[in-house]
Length: 438
Image (cartoon, rainbow, N blue to C red; front, side, top):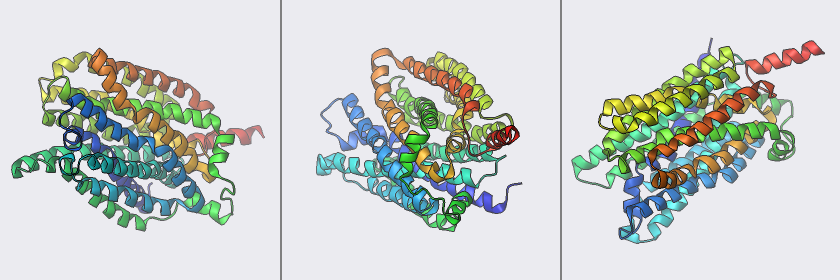
């Protein structure tokens, strides 16, 4: 049974991480409006789009250093203190983006301010999501880590849904009030205010019991945690990089970039694209807690295998039927949902599995290195790469990165049983096997 305290801890951690994800990715959902407001009107729409995605990528590119620094202090001074600081660091820049002056008002200062605030967002999210994953994984029991992982990532990905819903609602409100700028300002303002509220609520959380134990036993790492991770856990880091590539490609292609493709290539209305994307994200988010519980029963490897095969099959179906589905919001929504459910079998495992690869003393730094470097290299540059590929080869070219990600997921599924794990049911089985040999 899950205790009330464990449920509250999971809920508050997931709520904060959800708002962080919302604040970070809502930029993509209003990218078309931002490109018009923050760059010169006398250049082509495609150039403005590339400039807008370039600033989007900045948030990812600053994540490796910022996330690793935040993880260092998470391992050194505690998970909870960094938890509260990081969500404030996200909430304030998000709110400020919502009140920025435009290019028409201050010229090139507008995109400069946007870039600086975007970089601060990247600093925050680089530490927040690894912190939430480690915090929840350390609170979960050995037989529930998969379920806790799936619940956390499912709720976190509702941040995508909230971002899509906020963009859609802001568009309706701006039209009703005849104030076009509200279509992109409101999502940021609301996200910033909610983030500050979540920071206040997080004060109720207790420190991770595993971290509290190493503090009591004076086992906190005396050297730089990152140095330990790089020197002693290279194999775990490589596995983590592979896992992050898979997550970045699948999430970006299906639930972030394809919305832009629908609008710019297929001529789908913004509202229709948002609605279909919301349906797919909902299917993704709701499936992840279920897949997490499945992994508690059958293990990480078998669940990854199911996800990889299912995603490959659904991706082929998705791109084969995309052109015909754009005429109906129902057909398009179902297509996104068909893609979302098997993707959840992979993405839902990431918080628990990646946390399990490292011991408590260096767990947050171990998580942050592959997570943030992988996000910067793969997720941050994915929209730019996809925009270039789609422009040159057509929208169906996005299928091939997805199939590559599925192939890597199959490799990871075959390797996970041979990895040294420190959390979860499989870690206990490994420990019993070692004891039996002794």
